[in-house]
Image 1: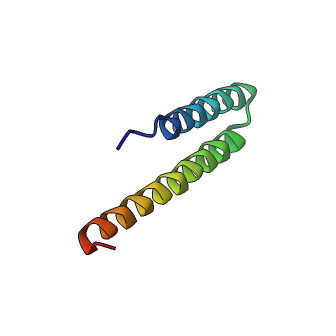
Image 2: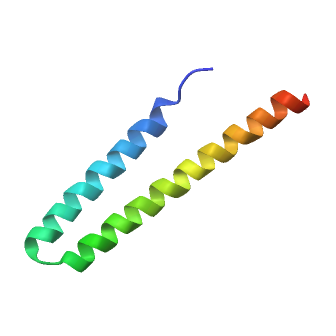
Length: 67
């Protein structure tokens, strides 16, 4: 039962890229695009985390139902 560090690095990498793009777009004056980039990055991470939580619940279900 090791921790999947790859997922943590993926989330951190997306966060760094989104923060970088948001800063660049904000300084150029494209605030609307910066907000869209941030929103899309957030949604990507949200779907990634929901799939991880879904896998967790299926593993818990198999443990307690002995499947």
